[in-house]
Length: 153
Image (tube, rainbow, N blue to C red):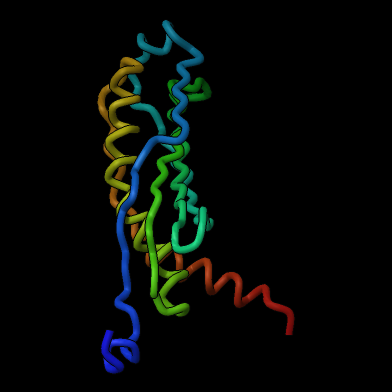
């Protein structure tokens, strides 16, 4: 290796190592009666994302989505999904690492989660449900602002 090559910083590396469903649960607690309801269900969606190191330069991001559909006061179905990804991130500047894990990785996982939830709802006997796109950058910025507001003065 020449002296010039030794002085150059290593190139940033970002790879998807694996995308997988870590946990998936579907419940239809009021079957079979709920299938006779004609009213459209009210949908509640809860979404969370977190990342943690697995080993040096390797991180797992977990996108957790809970969907609950209710017709009046009866639960039609509940889907709980943990869509996970293992990502290799090396030579990434420290200031870019947190946004990459909080925004970039969930953006990669979301289409897989969307498909898994739609498939689970369909297999539970309901019409397919497509989650609307999520702006993970806006969620990240809201979270950062909330943390800044809670910081002791």
